[in-house]
Length: 262
Image (cartoon, rainbow, N blue to C red; front, top):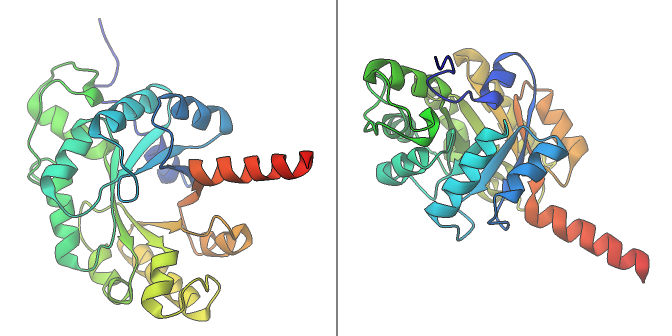
């Protein structure tokens, strides 16, 4: 008799719920499933596949997601925008969580949850056999509840407007995490590239307070080039940090190696 859980476990979500810090690697370059094994061996908790800034097909996303899940690495996907069909298909392809860029208002957060969660929390359409159930079929109500529990729904805070609305956004049921996109936030604040600007720190503190009030996770993004600064923001109560991308890791190591041999 098969006693496996009806839905694959979201290891990243479990780690954060236990009080740990989840560390993620952004994927924009490598299209093969090998990237999941590299993330596993390197010690990452999750892969963050970035469809906002890369040209991956949904088929590529699906193959990486299913491999990552099998290896115990949580696959998250940043979708290009707030489109219910894209969000649903991305999750059905095997993503264990979605990240919405440029979330601005409570209405955006409500629409995101509506697209990513099954009834009664949302209105996502149920696909019977799917990667999350290892293509097994189970009772609809039980399956939808288990998939809702395992799906990590994240909104990115990347503008002055979003920061101002952080409390209303964090109050939305079904939204799990607010991930600050520091580079775009700097642009919105009028201080491009000034990651350590006092206004950026103030924005982090404001969003962190909203997360604490409403029991949501805080995520740190865009500070991989400044690990000492990232640690300061993590100390505000963050549960997740993006530590860099496959492109950045490859370029950094390749450049250093070429310089060594020169």
